[in-house]
Length: 368
Image (cartoon, rainbow, N blue to C red; front, side, top):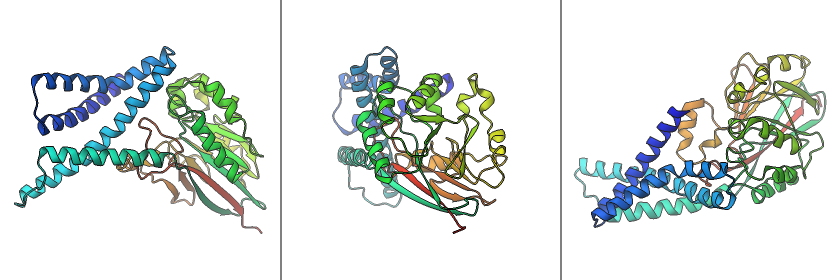
């Protein structure tokens, strides 16, 4: 954990050095300005840790304010870095090809800053436009009729996403009225706040065949036992290496590997639960991270975790890390994997070319 934190702070600090270095070279400067920029870089680099500290001490209002400032700045800084590097590349190519680059340092800084601000504004809007993604699957394993499953994932309920956001999620669920709702992890965030009220709010919508959930890595960060209590109070049956039959299909759920340090570590392997399902049943595996285990029997795996990258071009890093695209993917053995873009946001409260989604999966029988 200490190594990860050190690397993360080094990267984040380097991003600040790049942006504030651009500001330094673009305009007239003085030693006083240099010290101010250095201080700003230090404070902003460590501001996520400040959010964590304030939350742990229960200072709600200042935590919310600090979180919004810190994580909005993080989103803006990332966009500034990406756009700035593109401009740097264009400048280098122009120099290499003996073209005159039309922007001096000051003009380039202004243009990059403005473009980053525009993209930040668009990202705020996109993050609030929850889409309904429909997926249709036909199978002879369903005796008759059809069953609908709404998948929500990566809500990250807590300090920055609370009742207003949850209202939009529940409104969408009422709109599509699924038979089953499944939550594939990271429903609560590492900075949890007022979870009891949010759980009561969640319970206001109950699908006819039940709510089912599995843990994600953020349930562990927030405190596994308190997260499990929240999910159960919200009306979810948490599947921890267990199976449940609903609507003619079998749901199997596994903990995220981050929960392996808990006393329930023996429940992390779903092979026993899935093997208990009747051989002819259609098995839906709920697993937070989009990693396929060839030894676990399932027909459809539902995962999340990657947020579709959340902020372009992070999507390419997630593909490198997990070798899985968002959406429905057919596997070589005939099984299928669906990876959700997620419904909420983590860190910066924006999404860029990765709109949030609730997935409505219709599993229909081919016997009719």
